[in-house]
Length: 252
Image (tube, rainbow, N blue to C red; front, top):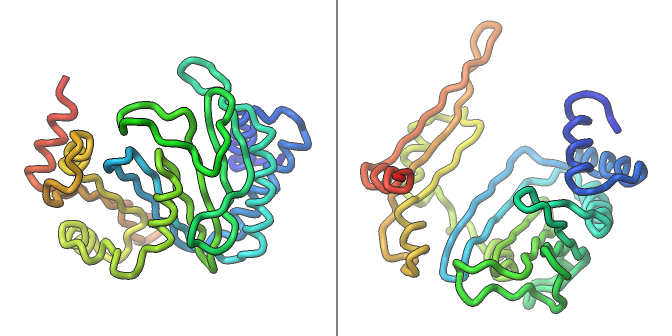
């Protein structure tokens, strides 16, 4: 394993994944190093809850596609030998690793199927009957397309990844005034930004997705360099409607 803080993090990750073999730990270290070398300059991630249940999305720029492909192949092989333990009840998480194909999407897609029992077969992990129920298994799907890495997971992960791959420049948060406004006021040196729309989440949980307008809480971290130091400025902006809904969430 590499020395230093990064090495310590990777050592903890290997332990969390249940990879006790020294060769697997070394392979994990090499794969994560290659991920770092191949990474581009930007990352975008999000979470949504609609009529099919929760879904997570991830996009990242890629600087070295060949190195990233090699790292992904190695990580999938390691995942197939991993045996992590979920922290609540101490049950072993089963991982079935391999590839799958998305209809109307060219090329192979890597798939990690996570379950607390024997991973079910089939091309897709079936979502539960209700978005509020717990699925028998969840798929994590990812692939590289050009200089971008795409990944998605959720109760309907195939639909989530397909939607992510099919997104166009018109599907842009810069075109949503409730998000673009606060980000514009944060300035051009934003390091990290994110938003949550509590009203829309509540509506989705109630089975009425899209029934309310956008009222997000937007947070950003901006860097300011001066002299010998760096100052970080945190800005949080939201409407009274969003703040009221967040307060309701936090009420006992």
